[in-house]
Length: 288
Image 1 (cartoon, helix red, strand yellow):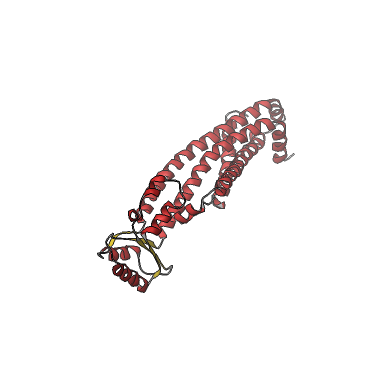
Image 2: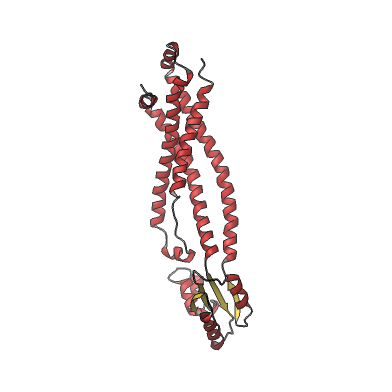
């Protein structure tokens, strides 16, 4: 009988115990995967904003039509500028207030919302936003130029904190998985103590006795990680179906699930961790 057959027979006989172990492993991995999912999407927004070729040129309240038209014309003639869109105070008010129910914003007059020129650079433009912003900021009719670089920097700081938190959570989760698998394998060993003693009496080595338990531990870790991915995928699909398209347009980014390489890596890590936990837990229990 092969090691796989022995592991399958043992799992089938103690399926309730193994099912409880898989469930516990899945719960632990869901916490870690949820943190990774947040980190991946925050990094996506940060990368999108850091690479965006977009700037908002906010105009002074007293800017004349001639001044605005001159700036707009100069921007359209600038090499590397792909698109220029004028947003009046009324347009800005409509975009911000929209059909929302915020009575405070709705009560504000159009003059409370600054007019602007929305500038987008071409994909192959050699012009940088910093250079463009410096040139525009010196014009008398321009109040401020927003390149959204500060938001990218803030997201970068948030991302660094998220990575640190995810790393700490990973250590906790891995320790929890190792503990769950180790405890489960110890219990299965006790339930099969008579079988193990018979094998030892007929000359079976510790390695021979240990192998099916190691395979069972690997299966627990791998299946638990896969179950966590399926559960998180279902939760992600529910969230994605309720995601506001307008918010995605505002952010310039739509949520995405974990890359398949990360998902596959999590399953492999779960299997390896389960096998290692099972091996170490039995090393001290089995004696020649």
